[in-house]
Every structure is written in C-alpha cells, then in structure tokens.
Length: 287
Ligand code: HPA
Image: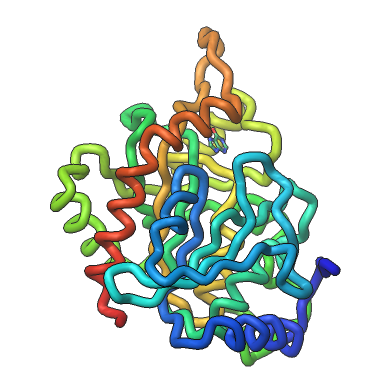
C-alpha cells in the first residue's frame, strides 16, 4: 500500500528499519539519479535493489523514463544508496511525499547527498550537453507555499526555520571541478542557479524571461524540495544539472521544449555524467 502526505518520524523510521534489515550497513552517501543518470545505479558493486512499490509505504514513480528503485551498493569501495528515479510535485505528490526518501536516507546514515537533474538553460552561454553545479536555487513553488517543510516540524529532523543560504556546499563544488578536470569535462562545466518550475508544463517564453531576470541559469521541475529537506536534517548537498535543452526565450524562435528531446540529450551524456559522479564519490571526504 502506498501512503502519501505528511510522514511522521515514526513512519520514516519504520521504512528505514525495513531497509536496514535487508541491506545492513553504514550508508553515508546518498545519490538521487535524475534524467540521464539512472544508469549509474546499474553500475554499483554488490548491488541490493528494491522496487519502490515493494517498500512498505513508499510512493511510486509515475513518469515514463523514470524508473523506481532504491539501490544500495558500492562505488570504489564506498557505500552509497541511490534513488534510481525520483518523485516530482507534478505527479500530484505533495512536496512532503516527494522528499520522503531524503528523510529515509537520513535515518539510513546519509551525511552527503548528490542530486542530479535534467534542466533547460535560460543562460544564453549554456549549451545542450553542458553541466551546471548548483551554487543556489530559486524554489518558486516553495516561495509560493509548497515548501516540503510546511506543517508540523519534528525537531528530530531539524529546526522550524532552517537557513537556505547554506544548502549547496562550496567545498563539494571544488572537488567536482577537480573531478571534471580529470575527466576532461571542465569545458562543459558551469556553476549557477537552478530555478524550479512546479511543472509539468514547460515554461512560457515570458516565464523563461522571468526566471532569467530573477537570476536563474537553468530551469527544472525537481531538486529544490529534496535539497531543502536534506539541508534541514543536516545532510550536506551537491547538486548538478545536465542541460538537456535551451529554453525558448524569444518570440521569433520556432523551437519548443519536449520530453523526448530531454531524454535524448540525457542519454547522449549519461556516460560522462556517470563517470563524473563516480569520480566525485571517490574524492568525497566520507568513507
Ligand atoms: N524546463 C523545465 N524543466 C526541464 C527543462 C526545461 O526546459 N528541461 C528539462 N527539464
């Protein structure tokens, strides 16, 4: 049976206990595999995989191209737990359900979260296939009341009023730059601001212009709820976007965003993104 809505501490604990019984260990690194990174979960050593639908009270993915599995395993000897496929607010889930797996990860022992996503670029200097490390975000749905922390606050997870200026750890971006350089990917690497649209419709031309004026470099439909919840419970975050399309920002353009294009660009770059994350895991100061 799947449960959606606000999860109590005891409910999150029960899910974590169920998983730890079947996958015992210390899981300090969590990875959310967005579009284009799903194949990373297939490369884990000693993998132990759980379909979301088989985890009691877990939500299930509803989007084609987004598999639903929690995979425990190792990357170069380091223990990692990967979400192969995530939940989105546009699927109809409240933000608190979208972020349930992050709290489960916290209770599994996760200290560092690597989050990836597919995004469209509004920054004109970004090209399809580029990578952008998140230095900040504009969580538009959150500002408008759909913040996953809305509702009763349980101090065991974190404070009522957490800061959002410290979500994305600068030290991880340094390591990521090193990883990109070692892989010859630095020419594709940016550092910028992720703007979140609740979706599922892609942005209008004026909405792209709005985000651009607000200071966003790329736009997507995920990530912010997860990183807010991770930071709230003391998990350090690294976020990365794969640019799968260039957003339409002028009325003369004949292009329009579509999901097939996003999946195709994700696939084309998936090996690079995968290698980048593997390299970054190796550099993280967590065993
Ligand atoms: N907009 C929002 N989300 C996206 C896009 C986009 O252009 N591309 C991939 N995810």
